[in-house]
Length: 303
Image 1 (cartoon, rainbow, N blue to C red):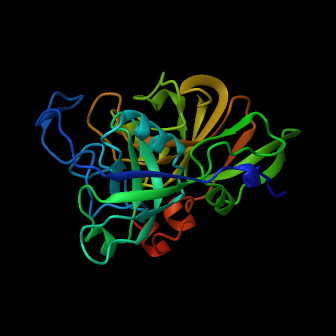
Image 2: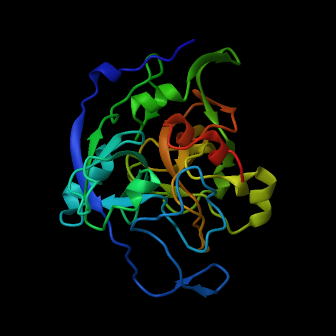
């Protein structure tokens, strides 16, 4: 059965940020193993890491694929930018410094809390012409999305066009109607770390802890890619992220793994339900690079 939403009641609004410069509080990041490492982390234009690539194994920490953007001048403006922009929204370069980049478009592919970045994917030829400070206009559309007939399901950060591309279905399971959505993997709540206790899931992300590599291999999480959609069991994201038995949260992988305690690939929330109204179904191709047409399947499904 087809899922219906209130998309005709949603408001489309402009929000704007700029390509954010990389930032460092210190030269080193000290890992859970006591080792101090120097390497790329958040911010900037990442030329060789995009949505669809593996999230593990890069010589960096919290690496953000594609382009990191924010409004660095006004905290309240940046809060609106981070809150109203949704995954799958169209993003357009409106003030490029290099000829040929102005007017080029891409898609919002995630949000990263703490640094308060909105992540955007552009084609490689556009990345090569972008510069720090170029302004990005986003047609923000999606916050307030509701699934008709399912008041216990909350959507966040999700463009309704992307939701439709995910092919959600209404199914009957155990005598109950549920919303079925595709995921590449399921994550147990005990692995969730940084971000727990935040006041909102309408921006930012929270991390899959990666300090036990054997558990990751056992669950198949070591193969996660940027843009993969995952289900987190016993996790609620109604008002920030918390443990709640029976709850299900659907999100996507937005940044790379980490050596810092309690950190790892970040998950931006798309859907959540506290009482099992969401039923994940396994699909190895549940990645927004395919849903949004960012890359061919041969570049996304292989490792």
